[in-house]
Image (cartoon, rainbow, N blue to C red; front, side):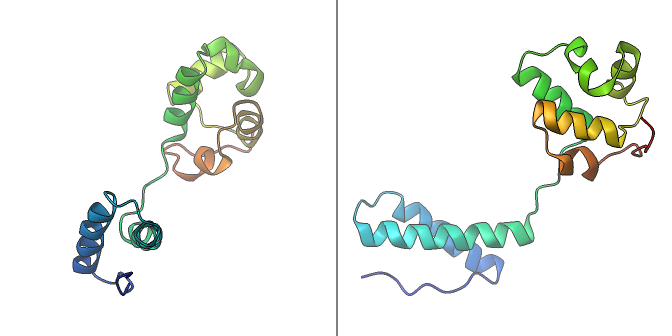
Length: 127
């Protein structure tokens, strides 16, 4: 029989839910797996409200994508501009422009929210 599931409102509720999830991970019956699904959703909602994950720095996101796709700075010229502009952006000497953000989003699939959201340098409207 499925346990009575309560909302997670406090850190104590959260800890209790994590313990229950740990126990349910060993189960194979459908009722336990259903309870696990529900508790996982509740825990995720609690974590989003209480432990938000900050967006990565835009340059760090670009560098990460470069590493993932084995790209060189020259590969970024189509999105950012000439080699000097690419170098300046990657060394944080030049802010991303709206045009660069759009191109990086389209060409590399980096979220515009990440490219805009947590920038330590201002975003320029220049091209």
